Image 1 (cartoon, helix red, strand yellow):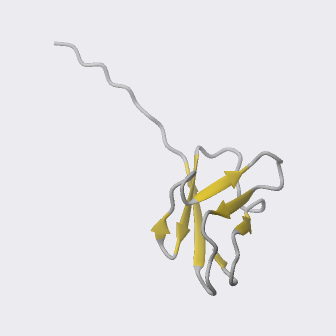
Image 2 (cartoon, rainbow, N blue to C red; image 1 turned 135 degrees about the horizontal axis):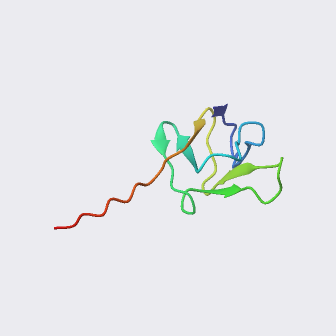
Length: 79
């Protein structure tokens, strides 16, 4: 996790961003943020991944991340 400074919007996640996960979540003070609305995840340059928040932080906000895998199972039911 990160502790913000006043006005901070960019957070370097290159050292924690795994390329083999399907989802990456961002939390601001414990609240899940929505990608594309609350933040942008820039993975265009491998090794320089970053999160950019839509709204600037005030001092000492906690920005956390989580990455996880999931699988979808399709079940076909027939009568």
